[in-house]
Amino acid sequence: MAKKKSESVGTGAGGSESVAAKPYVVLARKYRPQTFDDLIGQETMVQTLRNAFASGRIAHGFMLTGVRGVGKTTTARILARALNYETDAVNQPTIDMPELGRHCAAIMESRHPDVIEMDAASNTGVDNIREIIESARYRPLSARTKVFIIDEVHMLSKGAFNALLKTLEEPPGHVKFIFATTEVRKVPVTVLSRCQRFDLRRVDVPRLSQHLKSIATNEGASADDDALVLIARAAEGSVRDALSILDQAISTSWGERDGGTVTAAAVRALLGLADRGRIFDLLDLLVAGQIAETLAALDRLFQDGADAAQVLADLAEAVHITARIKAVGPEAAGDGLSQDEKRRAGALGERLSMALLARLWQMLLKGIEEAGKASNPLAAAEMVLIRIAHTSDLPPPDEIIRMLGGASEARRHGTRPASSAPQSAGATAEARPAEAPASSLESEDPSDFDFGPDGSDDDTGDEDGERRAVSPAVSLRPLNTFADVVALAGDKRDAKLRIALEEHVSLVRFDGAAGAIDLFLLPGASSDVGNDLREKLNKWTGRRWIVALSKARGERPIGDVRREREAHELAALKRHPAVAAVLAAFPDAEVSPVPPKARERDDDSKAG
Figure 1: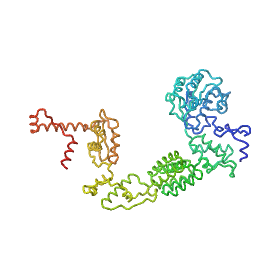
Figure 2: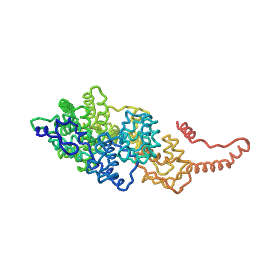
Figure 3: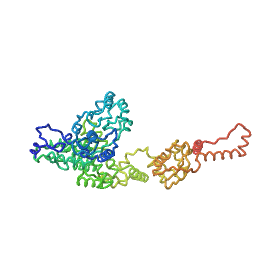
Figure 4: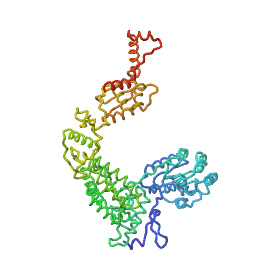
């Protein structure tokens, strides 16, 4: 097989050429698409262009966006070729180009005088754009259309963009503009609005691995399917990156005893990836809390050539796969996984709760960032795994609250709940201990408890007293009416919300049992009152509330009702014989209501 490959190498056009006659061309250039039919994964764009060319609705400006290596510049050249396609039988723009036309070879090789390519990364100024504008005035030398291809157009300066606007909006009939960029958000909207935009998609793993297999076969090399899947996954949808990795993998495996076959093990060693099976082994040890075994497994992976930060990334990917299978089912694993990997991920998902998987994901993401910045990535990765192993068996906050409730009951009876150490993260995720560990009681601050005047625990009252000690953030005020909701906002010292509920809303419906409130917003009310009330009620009461806005007006605002009631009370008080006599004796005297806070302070002082 090695001899066969050294004698003949396939070319991008499908022919063969002697290696001695022409220097070696890397696969990314050698297999660059020549027609729209050669593009993979961009069917939507090709179909749109086909319809536009067939109907004669060809735009004067195109914006090609997408990640690196998906074919933006290649598509621009093919589009320029389609605009200038000319043979003895065809003399009009067309998408179908079964053979090379008069201008095709020169256009695809970037040497045609009427197809001007410019790299905006090195030509960013106004003067460069002025040259294009000046050149656009003249008709093409030999082709039908003069095409300007500007790569990485987002690198142009603000002045250059402004200089281009007028010509881009109303170019001469013989001029077309094709822009390519990986950062479309950096392109001014005024430029985007003058172009037809095409977003070139990433090529999915199955399609890309099949493309790599055909190229490897054409090159006279053999490659395992698992190896090609690894390459496609590492390329992240970029065809150019995938071909570059395949080129390197073929060179790495060349002349070996297995006949030069590209294997998964060789690709993993080349990319510094860890075997997926060993990653799942590491994840099993990690969630089981076996720290010594986890660190030993990480060290073995590192000694075998795996990058420490990449191991964390592979762990995060395994957690993501497990969560997808747990949430949706085995069909959500994707086509890039083997049956054994799907089986292991499914088994892991059955053992672990979704809350634990989400926590592992967050901690691994943070760990990848730390390892990337650390001077010693291996040490950083070890610290991340140690942190995860120690925290992966912690219960979620609601379980901790229930545990503290059991601890409060034990304190009240002078007993301690039995210690229950979790055996593993998997066991903890499925069956949490019903009581708090003894260590959680020993670490509590005495200031967290309410004590009576004699120093004894004051948590001997009703059940509400116990709840108050356990979860002080949740209000125990009963919400039987809308007025209770307003009073709760006052208790929480949220003056803005309380005033809005008193003065700027009209109550349409209140159902405390169902947790539903319908409000009508009065003039001057903020549109965020409903969302603000819902979020704070959920937080204050520990239950879900639904706050809807009605189009029909309901009751009078609470503030208006209160002021009217106070006015009636004040008028009745002035009619009292004693008060009337005082007012008659002191004509300048006034009767004013006592503020509620002052009455409360007065009542408190009397009670003391």
